[in-house]
Image (tube, rainbow, N blue to C red):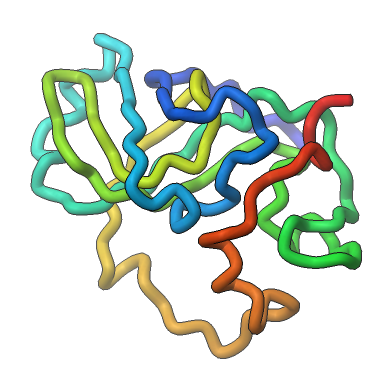
Length: 163
């Protein structure tokens, strides 16, 4: 498969988490915490009108993950699943995605609620969350059925850390 090109970071994410272990595995688990984005000056004009959105989709590089596994034991289960049937970070392309609530915009600095990423995480892109486009009601949730509510309380351990 051909490489479609290179990505560059548009900014950095600051969060209260310096280690993978103990970090929330989903934004629900970071309730009450605040993260920040410091956008590179070259991209500041791209923030025009962003304050009109309550929620954003952040796409970022899982920069502390090394390698990948096609089968993993995810945080919410005790058996292995294919990587594409999980939200595990040890993926062929170390890309993370979170939907967060935008709290404020101050120049090229954004504050957002419920960060579930590491401090110093490189930001690849920001997209506005639009419920009519992004919210769907799934018909089935695979092995996540009955477990998705645990995303608010389960914390990361060292299973996906670089060894």
